[in-house]
Length: 191
Image (tube, rainbow, N blue to C red; front, side, top):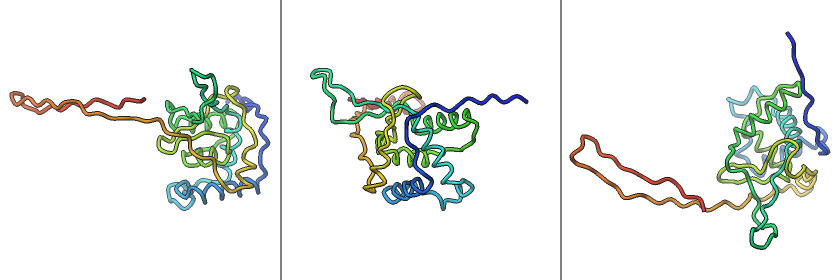
């Protein structure tokens, strides 16, 4: 059997020590207890510290989406951007594949991915849609050691502003001459 191992992507990120990573995990889980699934029977088999460390390191190699520039003024908007086209599970699979390509193995469940992203402190995220402000390896804004600020202050980055979505119902048509009733709705409109 031949196994080809690719080197993991290069990153200029300063990686925290094991003790700093454990403290970062506690900061994130204190702020977001919904992500702490260490006691969950479904995730008990995981080595959470190892999964978090590997995920954190690989997230350091990914690019960050920059703020959008206003088309009229050319200046950066106050709202931070996220990639709403890609779900957390997409990024979890992408990070899992990068870890595997680097010669290691990790499961990278969504809650650990989100916890590691929040611990970085420089990744935009959307609270409701669970989208992240990530882009591919070696593209976008480079990672910075903002995790030190998270560790120092014990506070996470604020969620990016959500885009407004409105829903409107179409008129309801019921034809009594047909065996079934059909009701139609119009999907969402993003503004």
